[in-house]
Image (cartoon, rainbow, N blue to C red):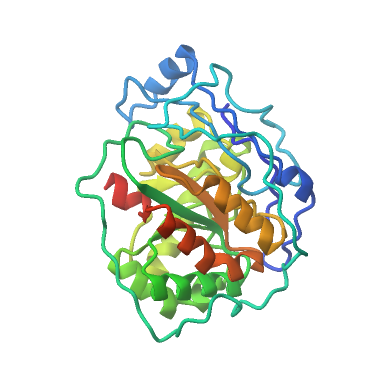
Length: 336
């Protein structure tokens, strides 16, 4: 089984306390190639139609969401193999040490703390990728040369963070991919703000399961149910399907999970390389420090819609991307 090495607690609608923020901030910079045996196994998935799917390419910095109770089929870590992976499939992290940052925790910061540009201002953007790139298996980065970055954001526990991201995107033209859990009411609450962004293609809504379940601990039928129920909610709210893109919670997947997901149309699992580490309630300064570390060309970076420490840093992160000459893309922008 392949895993994203991190600790992440499933967040309920009314509770968003991460039980192990120290573990959550531990940076894992090693990447791993799949063994030939895993590649042979994945060939049986069929839907991917790939003889060279990089099945366990998991060079992943930091965290997604942290399980408080490790599933009975608990992953023991990342896939085995060489730690040298091409940046075209798994962008390399420079260090396994967490960036240092000072500042007090700002988890209760006001969601309006972002740089005060008028909310009425609307910046438009369009897909900057001239031609969709080929999909060749579970992705942790954006293969090929370029100055693109995929800023992806998961979950949806805090409606104020969802609102802040939506207003930020509308104001700045930043292209984002939300991997959402349909169990959260935030998306219905802010549907009117999100819908124009979704319709324009600036905001992609992708599938992170309905209840943030660890898919490797579920039956095939339950895997299909988690993904299809979430897609139905996405269709109901936004009039679009999240297929074929999904992100397995905690990064837990194996050949069986991929086959079950593919059976209901989810053939493109999206992982990440580098995180804002805000699946726990860290300070705004720490969020920005992680952005400085991982906001690099051809990276897929993960953030979360759960804690407010990121809100005051959104415009600073955008300015960082601009200084580095990076263009934001959705996952669908890049792969079609």
